[in-house]
Length: 343
Image 1 (cartoon, rainbow, N blue to C red):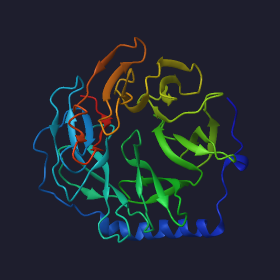
Image 2: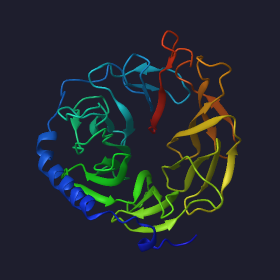
Image 3: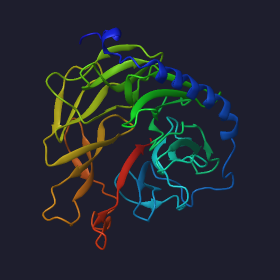
């Protein structure tokens, strides 16, 4: 595995962008005092959540659902169209949930800007954590990854002034409410190693190719883990830090977290997306998509769990894909499984 030359691979930003990032960090620190208040201290979920969290807009807006690990007991936890929830992630000890939602008070031409929030596992104590910068068509903050000790969150931020979108990686300390710009070369975070000092990230090299690499929490690249002669669509570090799951050309792979022993665990069907690892790091929950027969018909999608050694699979699809299709508008709604807690 070759070492990365930081001077070669880290993309240099223009001085104006660097200056802007400093302004963003400064303003974020000033604003944390106003974002730390409890939004709904009296609110709790109507049901105790199952170990698997689901984001879906099947009810009309993006809300939080849960189910058991065998796919049973699917239940809706939130129902507030004015406060959509996406990207929900259990904290390592299962006591909190971090998620993203719209940032109120940020006036942009399009309703894209999102902030990261955190709440207790029963839905109470919801509070806003980050303050994304204001910009045209801003996506804001997302890609939530908890630190192993549950005291920090790594996330990606879409920052101005690049119209097409420029993502950088931040870490926020939940106790001090301070943000740290970790890297402006990394684009997203795929996991936090159990030792607490390294991140698995996606970055772009000088040829603008997407690469998989290891970054320390001070922003230094350690090594490149991209499999030889292959591209990847997504990746995810296992909870114990021993494996990395990869999707590439609709096939699913695993490899050791040092980049060795790449193994295919599932052949291509039409499209596959990794959703989450099991808490024991022995199974992967993914979406399998099949090619639809006719235009303006629902796309067959199934949520499945596959054991990485035995290849045994079970179907845990929470909603029939026909239920997610609007036959009057010919539009499909979505359903994503985002996090799996040890029960």
